[in-house]
Image 1 (tube, rainbow, N blue to C red):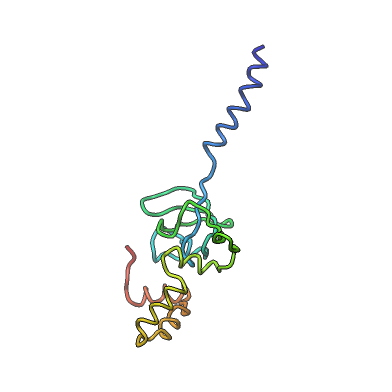
Image 2 (tube, one colour):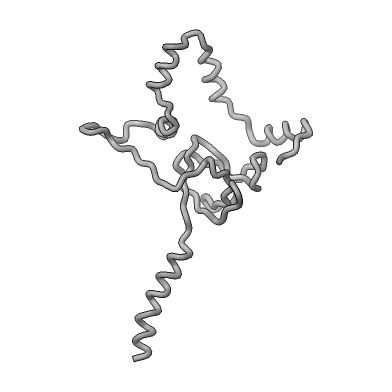
Length: 156
């Protein structure tokens, strides 16, 4: 009888223990971000992550999450993360899935092509071409690190 009790209780215990140690998953909510070597904004980049990429949380320290992404561990700031999963759904009677990941990310922040068009309509004299050029510019991490070094800047 004792053996049967142990055989019945042991699987329940193992399942409960596994649930307690289950890894938390968070998703990236910014267009692009970085998993960094240390929990500092200017720390070297270990991996690039994009909108809706899943990250496994290893630990937390203040406003930073220690995460794992595709076998790479590092830190990412909490402002780039959310706990939910985001899926496109159609409007009533419409079809879903008609927006890009970038559009979904911007719409989540209250900015979409319609808002942009309305703003441009109200402000035709502003230089939108310059904004578009700036959005396309991406400085390599090595250039950024060299800039910090040449300027004698220290990270907080």
